[in-house]
Image 1 (cartoon, each protein chain N blue to C red):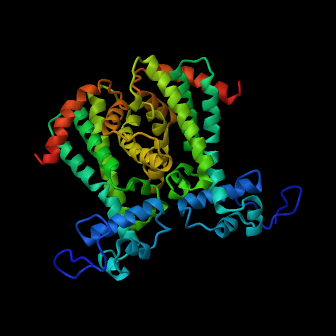
Image 2: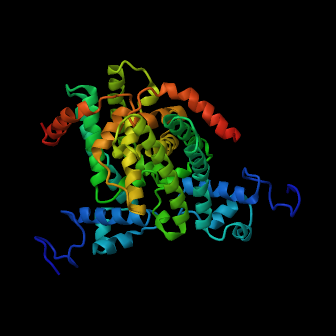
Image 3: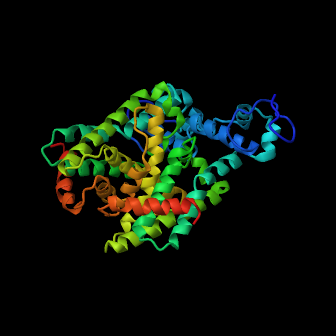
Length: 224
Length: 224
């Protein structure tokens, strides 16, 4: 038994990474949802994996859907904040889109669990997940907005391409999933993804975007 | 009651498209797996949706996993046959890759159910689905082979790009899934996908590939 600070001692030693009990619950749920499946996982199994009682779990999340909603939200909120900020930045649209692709791909690559694999669950079509779907739509719209500016800079008018950069960033999810099932795939490199996200629009000299986009990424990350 | 030909009359009128009872079972299962979820669907529900007894269903498929395996196989077999044939064709690699992307995207777009959404199920990591995973890996390898030829024709040596065209074709699955959840998205055009699959490699003049690739596609489809 370990007393991890103020409040009641835990029943068991901390099993999960995370600064709070809620974060530990989310980590355990993310593992179970992505490796066993969402509908095959019970809140009881999540509580067991964290080492807490089910009653404690319900104190943080009233339902299993609430846990899933929190996990999904976490895959979008950061990228959306970046997308919102990029709209007002003075850099050329191609640099801004490259920066968004880099940050979003890095986030999808580095999460401990491949949560994007849950985007295709039919359960997400219910009303409970409308707030998540709307937030993801807002992120998609930010990508489209930047993509349209890039297309305009290229002098191209091809609305069919507008949605492609957002789709390219999501390919990270499939790449991770295949790497986890089959092994032997190389780790996904956010630069490859960002290059591809610009190339699908018809942008040729992607190498020239890397340095200015890297500067923009570090400014955004340091909050300037 | 309708007697649809030789053999025993059906219990009910045919509810599902398909030339055989097995095809009807697959159609019903595809709908349930993609709209309710694989693990939330029972073989009983599938039998009910077809209008047959569970015993008849077991006559065709011993387990629910067998039904899923047959459905998944169906999303890969045709594209793999095309990929195998393209390897020996005399056309330039870019035209061959464009043709493969077009045929595969058209198949992913036009299936009655968005079966690619099942690729990310954790259940597929079990041994039962090894044959499917291997066949999908063979298809991925065909894409990579053609992509490497295209990169060589471009005088580029960037192995990070090799896997991208296969990932691009799979974006059809996410696009369909979002269209079905949220509505309002345009239908996916296989030409847009094929353009993007070449552009990610660094190919610029994709428009020049369309006519020769369309000729190749019609030759492949007519079996010449």
